[in-house]
Length: 158
Image (cartoon, rainbow, N blue to C red; front, side, top):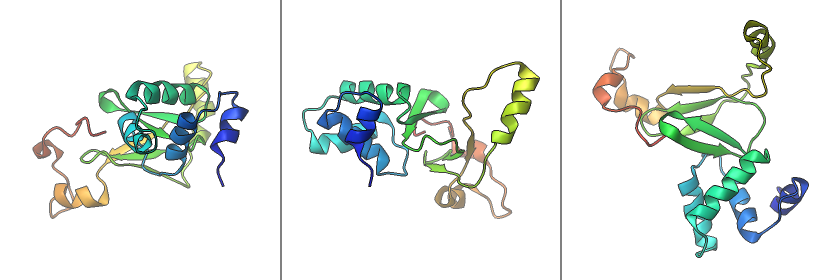
């Protein structure tokens, strides 16, 4: 069982009921919520919590490596309590974000460092496409998709 208080103490973060609740929300979902969704869920337990508190807490958790920030297009961020390197896939229509397990691109880190001269510290791989539900709406009968006729696929949903 996940113990939020223990994780916060391990990172030397002051334990508050609100911080523990925010961490629990992230740990108990595979949905990769944004700050506003986290806020809605925590507000049920703590009606007086502010959106600013949730933003500051999430930023603290990212800086402390308790969670990872997934930077999507359009300046939208989503959050994942699984901090192990793993790729994600995002639906360009509904904004759903899923983990991809069993696929690692870590073997590219060393060649990328040699090619660029950078010291790479983090790997973040994001694939974009259409989830099973949206694919049915977007794809034509021949299996190809006409995303240009679907409007703005870079919507703020993701």
